[in-house]
Image 1 (cartoon, one colour):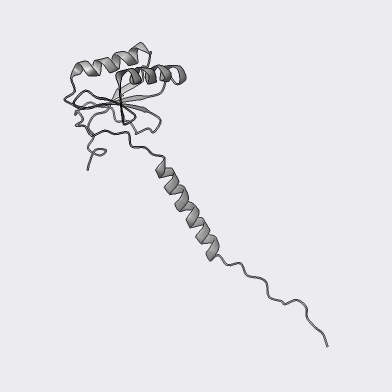
Image 2 (cartoon, rainbow, N blue to C red; image 1 turned 90 degrees about the vertical axis):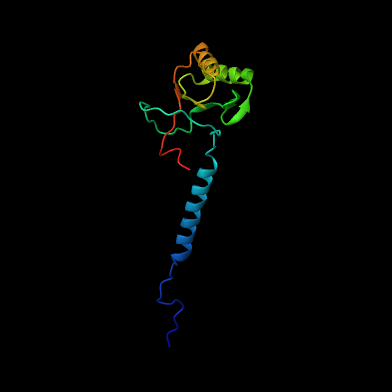
Length: 140
């Protein structure tokens, strides 16, 4: 009598756990990539422009904000004029070509805007733009 020590059946690999792992990894990477996007916007009424050049949003750009009272913001956080000047000086040393976006309320005194532009020009930062109202970006 012949005794079989091995069976003829091949072992099966279940695909369900593998698919579960792939979906969990996908969800993890989606959530972790969304967590690093920081909101730099401040609550202001943006000016409108008919001739504005539409540019894609860029996470690497620096955002300087000015609210209707003339308060300055650096990357969405309130700051003083001295802090803004220090940050612009550091930016001119580390990355002089980095894009700077100025978000300002349409009722900001023009002199406050000129102060920010003069500071950028003093530090030789020329890649400066002003954010205007855009129907697709600013809808609620």
